[in-house]
Length: 85
Image 1 (cartoon, helix red, strand yellow):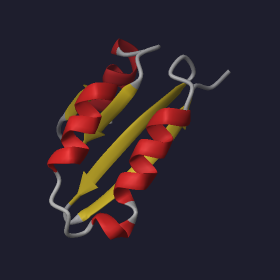
Image 2 (cartoon, one colour):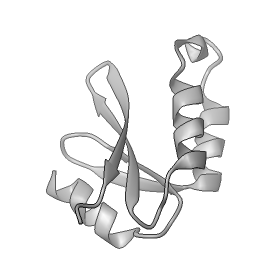
Image 3 (cartoon, helix red, strand yellow):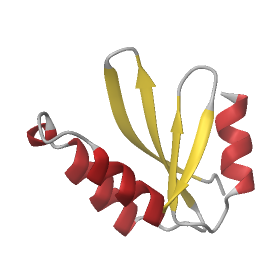
Image 4 (tube, helix red, strand yellow):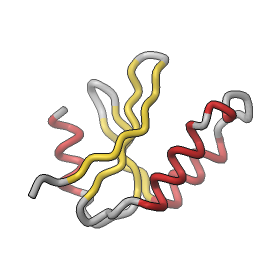
């Protein structure tokens, strides 16, 4: 998880999403996330992933919160983290 925390620290105040797994983390900006979403096949979009991701991306506070998508095998989750005060 150190790679995810380092990415959070590097991108404070930037609106985007941290895509990570057990070994790597890639930060995509707002524009890059929407390009990624548009590149997804239409099959499977009805599972709500795209809606959850784009809604979360539009509504979180990038100064105090961090949006992440974790891939673990075939499972993908949209996560929202908040800085401790």
